[in-house]
Image (cartoon, rainbow, N blue to C red; front, side, top):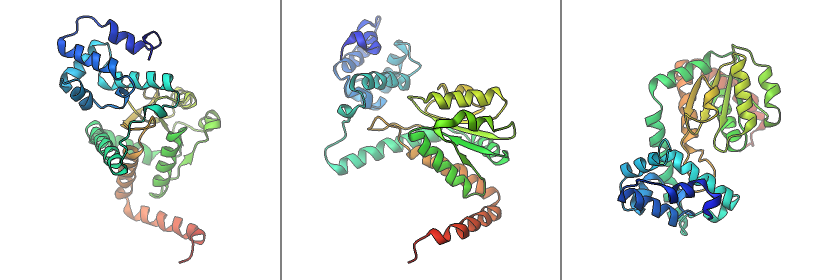
Amino acid sequence: MSATKNPLLNRLHSAQGLSPSQRQIADCLIANMNEAPLWGVEELAQKSQTCVATVVRFAKKLDYSGYLEMRKALVTAAKKHYGRGEQLLQAPVRASATLLEVARRDIRNLETLVQAVNEDLLKKVVHQIKSSRLRLAIGDGVSALMARQLAYLLINTGLPVIEGNPADFATQVGMLESKDLLIAISIMPYTQETLDAAAYARKRGIPVLAFTDTLNSPLAKSANLTLPIPGENLLFSHSVTTFGVLAHAIATSIASQDPHLALKKLREVERVALPKFAKS
């Protein structure tokens, strides 16, 4: 990968004042630019024969906020170089080993989520969702799948949710008022339509609940409440496992506050949908 076309590689080559351990990390990244975007912080520490703390200090030495921001720079550079990134997929050959690796990464994602989301934040999110008059959930690509899942779960608690159409976010957000709620989901690379819709809603005084990969994302800037959704993955897509757990937790919390209403609404949904089910 050419250094002239890769800003991160330029930083690695030109970095000054590195300690011997930090230089080991730089050399390790330079030698493994294809695989490095797939490494977690522990893996980089192991492969460079250093430690996690040194890796974090190294990332900050390169003017990143931490390892996650530096890893995103690695991923961005790899995407530009390899297009969709199929050549960077370094999953184990054996299917069982791949399953274990995918599970290991999602377990780590879930641990990160639990540490990042506290009781106070969840209470505010649950209250905002429950107290809103209308709820519009928007997202594009894998974010659209997340929006659909959240909408389904909330509907099962008795709260109606409208799923947004990526082709017409602006018009749909324009129908909302200050008593309503825009639920916006976007992860890197962020969808401009989602960012514009969230910014427009915030400007009009419409509450925005954001689900995004980092609290410093462009979407978070327009949000009243932001929930991080870690999603480190072997593929160049965002793992949906963490979001699924978070969405289930939110929906379950809402339902548990008024279980009789939730059960009543669920029975009504089942009664309407029953004719569509295959008969056993």
